[in-house]
Amino acid sequence: MRSSSVAKLLGAKVDFRVGSALKLPFRNRAFAFVTDRGCFHCLSAEDRPRWVTEAARVLKPGGTLFLRTFSDKAHPEYGPHCFKRRELLDAVKGHFRVLSLKRYPALGSGGPPSEPLWALLAKRR
Image 1 (cartoon, rainbow, N blue to C red):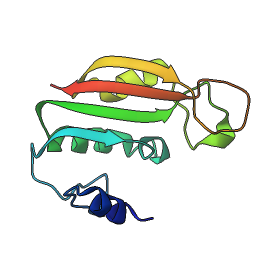
Image 2: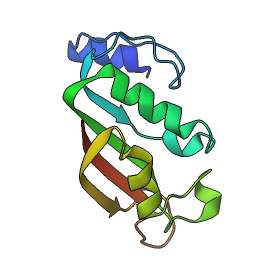
Image 3: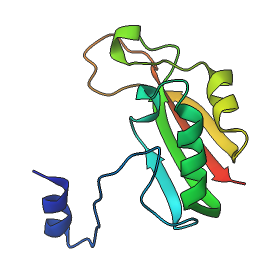
């Protein structure tokens, strides 16, 4: 079922848009919350700073960022880039104040228990 169908079924008013994470089609300070559950680790090292800048641009001051990405405990075949703790903190430090950075398991991986993902929660400076 498409996300728009689920939203309609639940009576939620949702505006789905397709665009580039590196040039978001929204005005500055448009949102209180931004989430990424699988884009950041797919970007090249050169594009990641632009992603961070765009996320910060569309967030209101004090807005919240939730980022889920692969950790260095993940197996390389599971994702394009697996971040070390310091690398992820350094990536967002100019625009965000990190509130929490925790590892957690990927559900349904079918493999042995591990904690291959990072969950980062941060506030826009």
